Picture 1 (tube, rainbow, N blue to C red):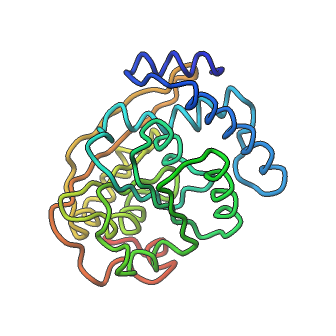
Picture 2 (cartoon, helix red, strand yellow):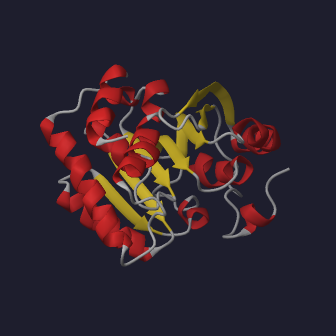
Length: 238
């Protein structure tokens, strides 16, 4: 997917990019490739791959979830900024907090956000488990999202405690989504969310399968979650 195809594909979905936004994506790509030579941000560095598998794939969440109706977004383990920064470029009103356990990535994200002149960005170097127990962030966000961080039974424990009651947990998953959802039923229920909507679709060009889950936060998360760093991964809630 080249730049023009990316612009057209978004237009077909009702997102018309301004010249400024087109330039922001272009610069994002350049910085990603440049910094990737110094640190491991992504295995995908060709222009067509980045525009499709990172930019378009991240924004695809907004085809099914209306980001115009929310303000605060937390992205857990965003790595090189996916999915929240492409979403932020398309919806500039969003206040985005990114938490990542690797300080080098936070350095990249800070530089990226300054260069792209994105305001309302907040970057935190922390383990997601500790971040979720921090009263400054716990149950503070309209939307909590993540892409390719962990299987859903683990991911939900890292994300759901951050969503405010009445807020949402939006999980971007690949083909294994339905299987992960089955395994995560107990965790999701324990943590206080219920499945609102699920969508299955294919990425254009390569036709790889994607699943998007939107969960409603219907009650407060019990204080013991998230548990200590590493525990959710070793022993998911069953």
